[in-house]
Length: 395
Image (cartoon, rainbow, N blue to C red; front, side, top):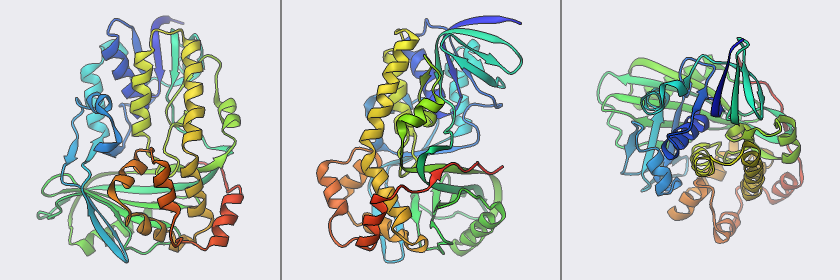
C-alpha cells in the first residue's frame, strides 16, 4: 500500500469539482491539489448552458478559458398560445471542452482520472485499489444522492448532436419549445445551433417518475427533427435524470451524507436551483469561495460550507413552492401553462429568476393575477409534502 499527501483532495471531476480545482489552482498555485474522477475524463458526457446574467464578473472570468458556444443575440421560447424572443445572451459548454481546459491548466499531478474513491475522511481518501491519499482538506463534489428526506419530481432528458445535411437556418437557441405532445409531463424540446449545420436537440420532461425510456425519447426526437426539416447524421448524445426538489428535511439529508470534517459542495451538498436543476451558477460561486478561503483548516472549511448549504436551502424556498404547484397542483399535460404564463413577464424578472435571485417584487408578480392552476389545488399542493426523491437512476 502506498500513500501520498496533498493540500486539497477534490473527489468528483464534474462541474463543481473541476471548477473548484481550477479556481484553487489559480488563486494558490503553490498548493498541491488533486482532482479525482472515477471515469476516463472530467465532466462525463454532459452539456451545461447558462444565461450571461447568471454570473458576475468573477464567475465569467473563471469560465473564460473554456471553449464554449455563445449566442449574444438572445434566445426563443415557444408555447401553444405564446412565442417570444428574449435578449439575454446565452452560453453553452460541452464536456470535451471542459476536460480539455482542465488538463491544459491544472498541474499534471492534479489530474487523477480513472480513480474511484471508496472512502472519504477529513484527513484523506481511499481508492478502490487500496491506495490511501492523505490530504489537509478533502472536498466532496460527487453527484446528487436520492434521499427519502427530500421531496419532489424529476427532470428527465435525452439530448442528441446532429449534423444536418443542409444549413438548418436557426439563428439562436430555442430554450423551450412546448408546442409538442406533453406525454403525461411538462415536455419541451431544447435546441442549440452549434454551427451552420450542427445542432444539439434535447427532449426534456418534468415528470413524476425518473423512468427514462430511451427508445420512446429517441423516436420523439426523430419526429421533432423531421417536422423542423432537419435531417442528417447523429454525432452523439446524452441522457440524464435530475431531481426537481420541492421540499423535505434538508438537515436530515445533510446528516445522512456528511462525513465529519469533509467539505461538501456540488449537487450532493444541495447546491442546485431546485426548480430548473441548474447547477452552474452554484458551482461557480462555491468554487470562488473555496479558492478564497483555501488556506483555512479542512474542518473550518467544512463548517463554512455547511452554513452555505443551509443558507442556500432557505434562499431557494420560493422555488420549492413553485415546484410543488407544478407537480402537485397542475395536471401533467397542463403543466406547460405555468411556464407559458411565466414567459409573458418582464425580461429582467426572468433573468433574476434563472439566476436564483428574484426580488420580493418579482415573487409577488409571479404569483399575482389569474393563476395557471386551480386555487384550491395550489393551496393543497403548498400544504402537502410531495413525493419522496428515492427512485434509483435508470441504468
